[in-house]
Image (tube, rainbow, N blue to C red; front, side, top):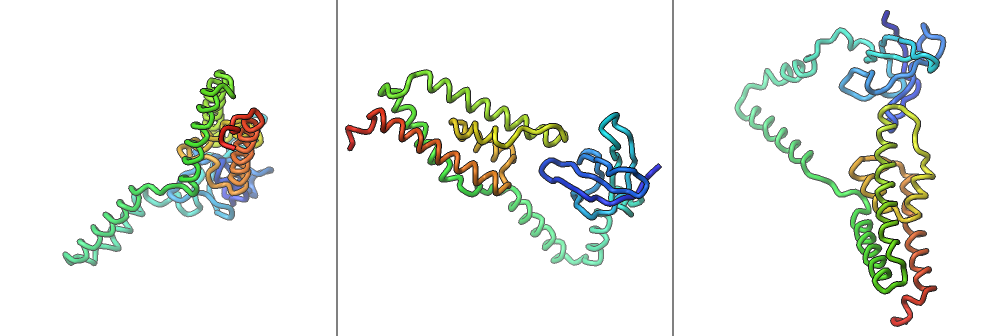
Length: 235
């Protein structure tokens, strides 16, 4: 039997939340996969849902949708939009609509470089060149290249696993572990994962610590090579 309630918590990054309903003894968990609607859920949204039991994990909601939307036909929004344009039958009006649609398509298709992209890619090139030079001059052992490659592959895998866990509402990987990988030398892979997977790319606090790990890693590498006398011919 459908129940009514209100979304009291919603985690957009992890894609799950809880519904509070007078007909339920506890807040009811739901995932974005259980939500039906064209707009994302938000706290305070009145919804209608079906409640099921998930074993020891408590109640779970399915077929969640905004209250009042359950009786609307699937093509309602499109019909309203066509109805709003129907009185505008002039050739100029149709041309304007096509122009606006084309402009919107062009805006969507135009990629926007993330903030700090130029700096990040520049640091990657400089870092890779420094490591290669240090290995070539034998200030770093050859296995350093393999170790850094493996570290970056591990970082990519953990970011992908954490992204998948966020979508599934499962146990997440601790952020301090991701920061530790970046500090040890996995920061290039972390940057690529953040941008390509759209994961951890909008959390200001996480990004601030991430950039701090880049600075600390590069400073530690430069300090180590300086202590090994790598820069003495130029000093």
